[in-house]
Image (cartoon, rainbow, N blue to C red; front, top):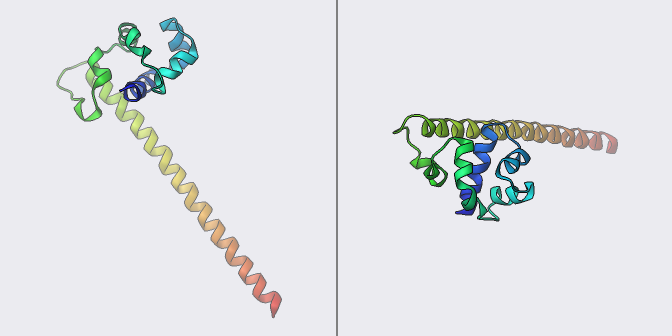
Length: 126
């Protein structure tokens, strides 16, 4: 549960463009204590749930819903949460697609280098 809630805290925080430091200041805790919450190493988020929900303008139950359970049944914040998650997922996918393209190019370059080395080795032995 701590990992799941921590992950949600991170998504919501990044969605509003805040740093861990700013978030920890708003909760009156250290940045490292807040980082432990996001990393799932602490359940102290439970003691700050009211302030967390005020900051993100969400209902407490939103922190505990799995993505499949987030529906646009209610208007307002639940829909905003769904859009925020979608936006984050799209950015993650784009990042991985870019990495895949870079790795594919690296593979092509390595194959070309290897081919050139074989060609020069063959001509040197002749």
